[in-house]
Image (cartoon, helix red, strand yellow):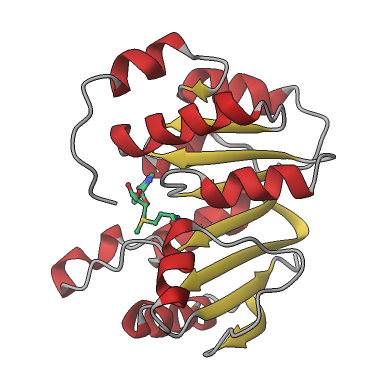
Length: 208
Ligand SMILES: C[S@@+](CC[C@H](N)C(=O)[O-])C[C@H]1O[C@@H](n2cnc3c(N)ncnc32)[C@H](O)[C@@H]1O
């Protein structure tokens, strides 16, 4: 998500540590959390997570986002909505993942992750094997990793890696036409659907 730099963004993040956590406060928060914990990785301006938080008040949702202007916009929306079960985390998932405990997360969402089309950038894709292994490690047994993308190459790359690692794909939809009732539309999804782009979806369950 390329947003123009916003002068107010970093000061806003620093002034709202209750809405936008840093790595340390996120790890502290999840260590004492009793509600089911869901993560969205690359939460952008927060639309998906704010809708999920409103839909499922019994759970807590964390959106990990490394782009400062995007997470600041998300934080502003969160302040307006006063949802107490949504937080954003100012971090790169790559540095955060190793510190998250095994089997501590109830579900992970990857919505319209950056496709990084060049071959020499494939390690940056969030469905690269190195990320999938970590995502499956932190999920509880029976929990789901849900991936949506408009990008054909990223969809094929993700499916290939999941199969190679022998994780259980419980749903693979090339054309995800009607959003499920337990889902919400991210900003990218809303824009792609408005321009009639096809949305692809993969749902992977951690079985052991
Ligand atoms: C294409 S945008 C999609 C935003 C949102 N999920 C949506 O569907 O509207 C991808 C987002 O993932 C974030 N992102 C990419 N790699 C990341 C990483 N390693 N850690 C945290 N955020 C990341 C980007 O900064 C960007 O905001």
